[in-house]
Image 1 (spheres, one colour):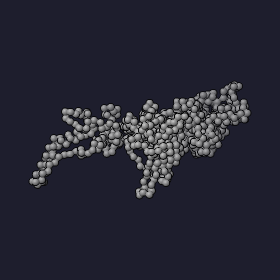
Image 2 (cartoon, rainbow, N blue to C red):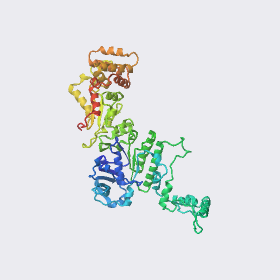
Image 3 (cartoon, helix red, strand yellow):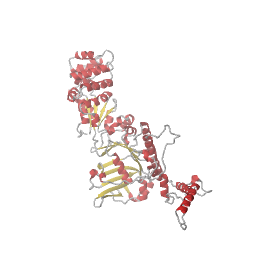
Length: 627
């Protein structure tokens, strides 16, 4: 079985949240305080954990700390096996699926804050049934629901060390068959390797208490005691006793396990000294996964919960971990839910297994939830790398088609006073391919569940001016479509069609005013003295040969119209092979020198579509556009 549905009401940052889960691996992504840990903790509260750690509900666990409300968490489990159906027979709900009545299990967990007690206390209850009217599941059956939980790893050194109530001892004592073996040692009959851990503890205690050195010390002690301190009629003899030797077997086991450290074998270690925090974290996770694996083997664990597995772990180990978890989930039909801040992990898993958390809502990227089609999923799983995957954690997203925009716009946004960094904007360069595919990640199929992340798609209008064929390409090829080949209505329709392919909900397309980025930069800025100087300086630096600033400036001034001046400027990219990426990089540097602390003047010298796109993803509205 697997957790297919979760509803959380009045718990921490969630007033009323509903999430659907797929079988296998699920990855929860989102910025800080988006609710990832709250979801994990909600599942833990309902199911319990294999380490039997109990968590108390506090007043700040209630939504907006409103202790008059009631926390309600509903879990639905689907695809129950025959043995699972038998365990929860009295608690099952039957739902119609494709003309068949299919059993499922609902768990209703509620908690109230009782202020009439001194001190106040919380009272959690659990029931079953779709409406919560069913009986409580039997304790034995609930053991099958316990989740294995891996907390965010911060100080794994202490988790692996000995000590009172150490994490390592708690993990080991919950491993099945930990007490297996002979409990008593009989000389000549029992082999040491056949002893249980408790048998070893008892034997160790006996050998220690009966050691001849301690016996001799005890006699010397008695001699001093009787000769110098006791009266003749005082018959007192002493002996050494190991503390806890007469304790229960369970206490003996715990005491023994609390003496254990988990360390790296010095002979296998490739480095000298203490291992780093990353390796310690990996070892700590291995311990927790061992507990999960053992519980799975005896059908006692339903789900694995992992928070931030990437903590302190380098990229290659992150990849190995997430791939092994994904393979394990698919192979053994296990359910694993992970939270992460790592773009690397988010880019590695299948897109349909990701859930974005934003503003108290969950947005699964499953196939039926987004406007992505089958080909989109295949494409994005191939090309969505770690750099692009930072869009899952952004407050807004700008998608561009090439390195020119990607290198220039962050600098422009900062000079305009709308820094991408300050506003949490993720810039994604799709390298001329798949702009609309990336945009559809943020578009939902259900009209009332829009993902409130402003997404600006910046693209070219791609209609050249009438002078461009001759100036930019040195020909009058009739196959080149220019402005005069279109009526005003056709030009408007062309731009409208570009936008319609992508626009919808909070995704908005910004089309260049004329032709391409470089042409439009020249068109908007060639008559502005400071911008003209920055453009020419950047072009000269990116050019080779005798393309000096003065020569470029003189050639531009030979033309009378703005279209011709901008077309000549653009000819350096079409005819002379100047790199657009290098030009944008040089221009960003020039703009920093010329327009620092001059945002209004820069705004006047830029193409309007760039200014509007930057504004939309920074200070823009959050009302969305028509769907």
